[in-house]
Length: 181
Image (cartoon, rainbow, N blue to C red; front, side, top):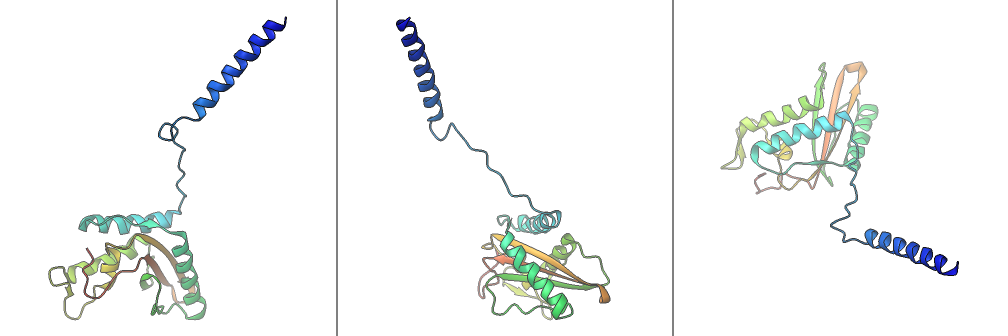
């Protein structure tokens, strides 16, 4: 009986050995599944609207950043609670920023970004200037080639039916003397 036990033990060891070698395959054969964090519908709408405008001028897409969203949410809440939905002051700021103040409108994330992108009609890329009596800074921030991350939030002042939209960008754009793309 002893030789049969040795054969069973040897077969068991060979099975365990072959199973262990399968686990130690090269890394390119064993690819762990990557999970992409889920973002809210509003975050997706903000990101998609930004990336649509960026694609038109050939710059890489932005990715949603939870830290930037939290900072934007905090500022939107502060502006709503403490400043009656006034425009926020961003200077000096760690991030690039855009904001939109709208009274009496249902401002969706897409509408906010589309409003900023409308400034493109006043922007002259060749001279990197804006038409007289117009601004182009919010458009240029949306499409700024070096910005990689985005986070946005909205605050609503019910008594005035005002919506304040704030987006932060990292790294910031609108560097004086540089073109956005």
